[in-house]
Length: 147
Image 1 (cartoon, rainbow, N blue to C red):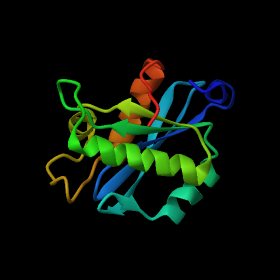
Image 2 (cartoon, rainbow, N blue to C red; image 1 turned 60 degrees about the vertical axis):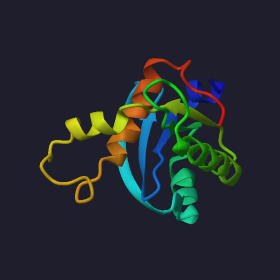
Image 3 (tube, rainbow, N blue to C red; image 1 turned 45 degrees about the horizontal axis):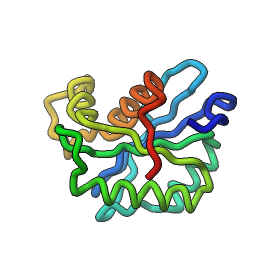
Image 4 (cartoon, helix red, strand yellow; image 1 turned 180 degrees about the horizontal axis):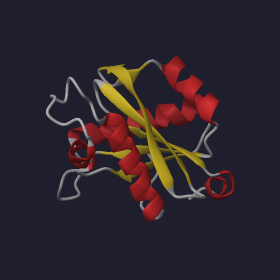
């Protein structure tokens, strides 16, 4: 884990998707995470200016990106794209980026969303999923890996 995450505390987490990318912020000091927003994406490509603006605004010591592994732990087809997103995020921001296993984060986010009953398209839960990714990393900081 980058040492700066312990000292400065602010961490951003992204739940990568081809149509939307969830974003959450958290604090290493308090070990808490908060859903922030969903960023629209076109075939997995976000508005990079908006992403860079958010990173400048939050000044995170560390950025996490969810790694969508299959249930057996093998890499899914989406893992390649999530890793590419993470590498681009690092290249554009200069911030350290780690990949974190995100299995079941979207399913759990759907159960935590208090406004169930709407379809996923009407009520996306990507930011909630990003906060769950961040919380899982805060609970076990050995989970992260390089993109």
